Image (cartoon, rainbow, N blue to C red; front, top):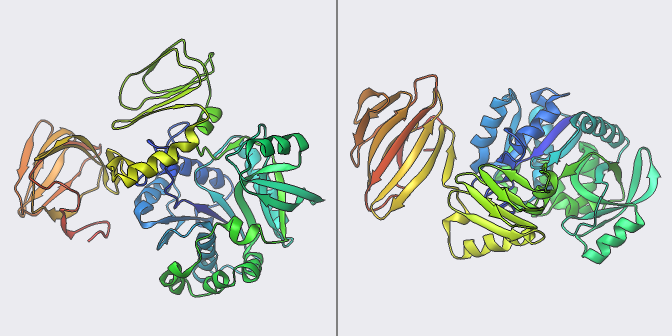
Length: 460
């Protein structure tokens, strides 16, 4: 069996925490491990890293790579999608990789899992995965149907048909219903939320793609590198729409373990532990007479007075306040911000890089101030800037600095100046993170004013 973890999505439904440059799968929602990290860890219970394949895109490669290394899963495979084409092409790309690169045969089972869901009772989850894998070897596409505990308009549904093995044959997939239909599904029974998880053999997948998406099947049979070069020809469809909804070989296993795709702030509220007044509180928050509300602070003290059924999420540059039940509309807010070309729709104030991260502390015409963290043993590219000079002040750790071909060591409470149009490089040779304050001066201070002459990470 090979596990395919889909980690290329750039969803913004959890804005302002989730943004295009740092989407939901990398967030730490319920602890100190990201959702992607939790997904990988679940499968490491029973599989070696070599049997795990993470599908992502170039923008998120270093995030994924660092997460895998942190978990001791550095030998897991990473596939980079040339472009975002939805889940069907991503799965076809994975199948092609398994056949052409790894050398799997048509009987190999692929288990496809999203990277951004919450699952409790992980041992029971793995047991259910093993059941799905065994059932898929009987020539079926097997999915998990989440047993609903409330009428829900934010999920697609699966209607179960005749019993089969430890589940049911699928009668139909149903798009997200309105509230009346969702309530009817709950009352009638036999309807399940679509989890987006699938198990199938490569041979079964290829046969069903040949029936329902022949072009995609043709692409999946190409040598892997040829498929990469033609990936943009693939239809941009979900695996649900492309194959599962059309196939008569799909079975569903009722899934009673707690699960959430945490696709909205309302879903976050439902998923996380609550205090005695029904509030979800994270970060530096003070509540007085608040009930059934979510307060989440990351950079400042957040005070809630007399709130009820309210969602408040604070980050360094954005505060979102919404009535519970309205958070699905956050995507409309993000689209408006994109239309207005607002930076907040795309970028966090903290930007992550393969060598560490930087946070913009202040900026105005002519200057920008950053806090830069460099991981131990990492270094930035050898680079220069045409339009800005930089002043570095070391707060923690020791920096090895190269400026104009000359190297020097800079320690805590020491500083150095980097003139415009001068080649320079910053490195952390120590055992603890290097933290510096960088003050940029110039009339153009955007990130694209970088000319790289050498880079550890292939970015030049």
